[in-house]
Amino acid sequence: MSIAAPSVRSELQIEDHPEWGPFGAPLFDADHARSLSRVGVIDIGSNSVRMVVFDGAARSPAYFYNEKILCGLGAGFAETGRLNPEGRLRALSALRRFAALSKGMGVSPLLTVATAAVRDAKDGATFRKDVLDQTGLAIRIIAGEEEARLSAQGVLLGWPGANGLICDIGGSSMELATLEGGGVIGRRRSMDLGPLKLMGIKGGKRAIKAHIKSRISELKAEFSDPHQRLFLVGGSWRAIARIDMERRGYPLKVLHEYRMTPKAILETLKYISKTDIETLRLQTGTSIERLRLVPLAALVLKELLRNLKPRDVAVSSYGIREGLLYEQMSEELRKRDPLIEAARHAEAMSARIPGFGRKLYHFVEPLFPKAKPEKKRLIRAACLLHDVSWRAHPDYRAETCFDNATRANLGGLAHWERVYLGLALLHRYKSNRDTTNFDINLLTLLPEAQAREAEILGRAMRFGAMLTLEKPLDHCFVDANWRRKTLNLHLLSDAARDLFGEVAEARFGALALAMNLTPNIIDERAGS
Image (cartoon, rainbow, N blue to C red):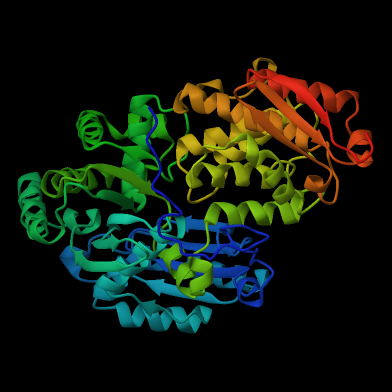
């Protein structure tokens, strides 16, 4: 089943540039973009301590380094009001390691934050002092509503213009924030509904359920909107989504932007309640430490769905850490399309002829006259990425392109769009996909009409890539006459005529065949 992606461009107000189009000129070489090329975040949560170092494209950064230790700082907090002693030792050990690593990597800036466990613990101030003394890391304590805001910013990093409700669950707390379109963050709340906090409630499962029901009922009037999308942030939600994938037999194991209906989630929650943890671990590869929190998180999610009644649910792998990165960005950067910026950066770093992707896009664009802006951004991204995998072995280049596109760490890209991009790039390098060893099950996420269009795009790029002229449109262009059922190549110069050799002619014919058109060469050279 395919679900349309939220419009990435709908809220972005970037003025069209005469040369670069609606996405503006690339920014990753600008000073304010380069300053974000290696940003580190250490996130001290109630359950885990993690260091992430972002590197790469300014608007859609890569994860240069990512390490997590499940310390359980918040375990037993309800009984003692203090940080877990064993978790404290493990966290200090992890933080000493992270401080040393960040120096070796030249990370700047390095942001160190702590959330509910350190925020609420009686010995939180002592822990902060110990961390500073032993590592030099100055911890910034994030208040509950501030945590909600940062999580919302993390969602905006991947979904510019997102609209809906963000729900971030940690070990000790759960945060809610509304996104009202155009990057506006509205109402925010923090509640004591993290699984580690719920474990400390006396009275067993009945008392826990009553507490959850009471707390979430407080949110109903403020956050309930049956037309909104619910964005889930946090490790426990992702673990539930992974189980949902396995239960459904979903072919693409990318959690970011994975979509679920409330009905499907309820079926998965029922499955979780009937399945032992070891079976779930074997099915999903999720750690036992994480899975022990899932049953309690499942109770919270069930009550959320019952009270808030969202129309659908999307998983975000981006949260507070990405929100901190988003906070460092200029407003101009924030408004950029993460997919296009990442594709531009990949082309600049890896393509044989950086800059040709934009020219290729203008060459193939006339073949898609009815494409809407959401589709044109995919076509543009494909053209920018059309040659970034050229170093792969020629025998495996097509499937490498497919795998890279479908499994890339990218925001602003729905799952069906990943498959569309992958299929287009596969056909950029190989005419017949039947002889290509790629995961054919992923095509179930793409409607047949979209698959045919992706193939046409790939064949168009395969042909256009042979016209490596400085300004291809000054020498030739293509258009389609749908009434006469012809695909026309207009030759405007001797250089174009020379480049249109035997292989190019075969590729032009293959493109016409895919479009159910007849190839037609129109020689418009002066004096011809």
